[in-house]
Image 1 (cartoon, rainbow, N blue to C red):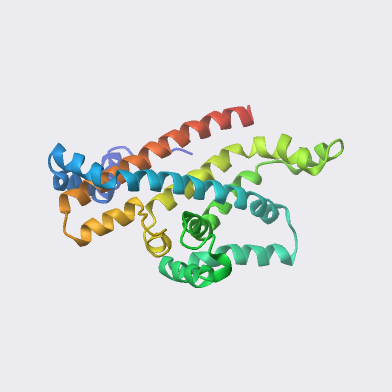
Image 2: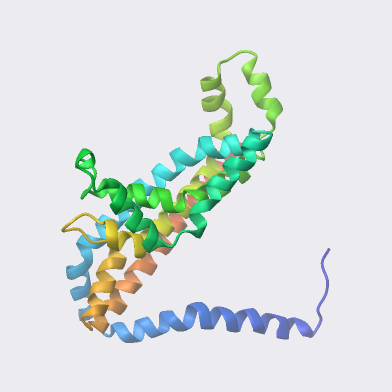
Amino acid sequence: MVYSLGRRRYISALFPAVITFLALAAPILALLKGAGNLVNYENAWKGGAGAVWYSLWTSAASAGGMALFSFPVAYCLVRMRGGLRGLLDFLIQTPFGAPSIVLGIGFITLWNQPIFDAVYGTSLLLILAMIAAYSPFVIKVISAGIKRVDEDLESVGRMGAGPLKVATRILLPLTAPPLIAGFAVGFVLSLSNLGTSLLVVAPGRSTLPITIYNYLHYGADETVCALSLFLLALTAASLALLLLIYKFLSRRAWR
């Protein structure tokens, strides 16, 4: 139902406009002012290009791992019945209450063992930490998509095919859009993470948030502002690309 606000529509629009300006536009304008001229952007890129590419591929790998891990968990969460479902739901939500620094220390304690030398001190540890930290968010997104798939479609499919074929021919095509949405959530959260990354990043490596943090520590304000804008631009461009993929898959899945 649509209500006509009349003249009050201008006052109603003013409130979200002010909130949007204070929360988004004003900080971006402050960063643009702080970054200064183009020379500062060039210097920031020279100092942070390696961190940009490292952040991109580790975030993409983390998001892919989250999607692979979260899909079967989300399926069980949606289709299961009884007490086990409640237990699974509780276990999934426990990482929400763990601060990022606590998660990082926990990962160091767990993986800093002789038998895990192949993992500890590598980029794989950072990827695993991101998967552990943000999979609950991705599971919730994918669960919402699986709920839209009629169980009868799977039941009919099982009459002439095995579970693997049903999953690849029916379930995965219909849940491709929420999988992309979950990937986007995991990617953006991994790209912007600082607390856990700061503790578990591989020696000699640096993500973009860590690089920004280091420059901030040394008082390089122009570089900090320029790199922050790079991070915003990367996030916006990545979300725009994933949104296009999401819309394309949505049209194919539900046409």
